[in-house]
Length: 99
Image (cartoon, rainbow, N blue to C red):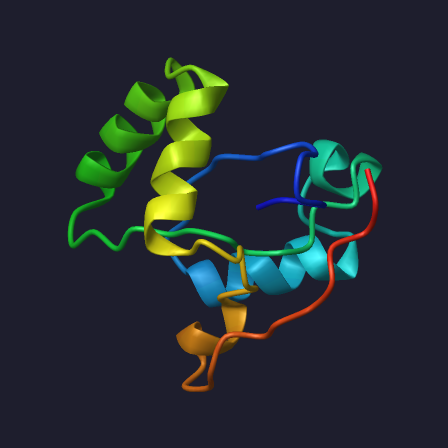
């Protein structure tokens, strides 16, 4: 999740990504996400096994910020909000807040 182009990034894993993003957007997700207004899903990677998802999450949390940004921009250069793709829609293009 991200809040603006050069802003804060949040990395996590979830059993049900649609539900988890909905929780984050409603303010019920986590204190960190709410505090930093992290409401845009800019990258995700599906897994069949929970253990694989957790391993990937822990691995990526050790990465440098630059590596995470490169991964996001390689797959989503405009950092569109990908939440709609999870529910069968198209990515939402929104202007980033200045920052």
